[in-house]
Image (cartoon, rainbow, N blue to C red; front, side, top):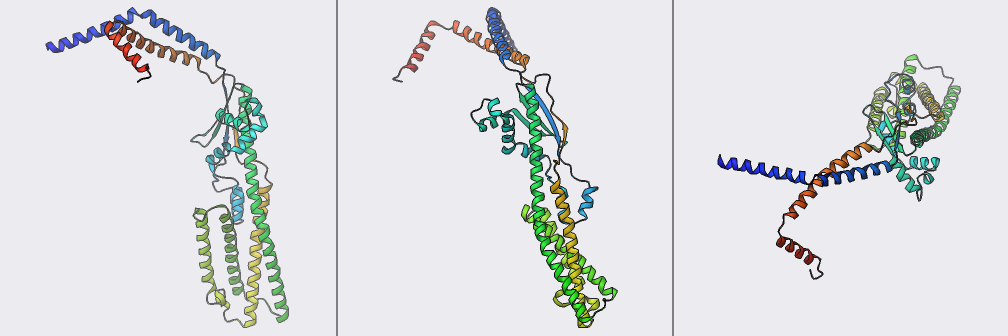
Length: 393
């Protein structure tokens, strides 16, 4: 207990000595803090006001399966692709906003090289990227926050970014739709020739042999095979388009291949034991002339079904290409801010005052230690300092 009491007493005396030092040099603490606060006030007042303007956009949401998308989906694989437009969610639009092409367009449109007094467009682009912050919330809404010394320019920056985003999405949508339209145009040319050849062949064969129509069961079988082949051709065209846009490991490509394999299985089941795997069991015993007529009729109906599907898809692709509006919605346009967002002058002064207080305490304790140092100890310190400065060392 005696040792514990002595320890407590020594600690109390040490704290008392510290307080005495603080009281003795209080004016020095006040001077240091006052000078620091005054300097921080001058510095914060010299800082220019920064204004922030915010624009908000809503990327296209995933379709729930109704409306126009459902109707277009009934037209076939490519129609569904054309109806989709530019998807990808918030990440895609964030990437577009941060792209060099959009930044360069804003720099050129607002003449930011002159505004920022930059050496070149690249330097202006770097300052623009530092002045603009884009982020997506959990709700998917994208916020575009632009900062500038001029409140009007901050709003102009945010709204110009939104305008350039709209232009870029329109251009990308049109490019995608144009590629699909050109692909379908070429495919339709081949199908038209095949359809005309099938019509001419059936007409010539019927006139030469003076045939009547096959019975209703044979016609139903032919139409069933024609329907499956038309759907198979449509899915193959859709797979060809997807192969130009995605890798073979894409879930959409795998699903398309699976659908094609199922249709081929159904076609083989209907085909039975016919020639080349495409005969019609219900009319397998039809005389040679009637069987040949059925084959030609089947080919004609197949080409008609393919032509109908591709025509629908082609019209949808043209409609999608003709669209001239972006696929996102502007929730809030940026307005000219009334109040500054930075600098936080009061916070600067408070933090400076707190830092100066602790620095002044450190300084006075160092000074107090030096004042109590013996003369011999001082001389030793000076000799060591001179030795460190000597070139021989």
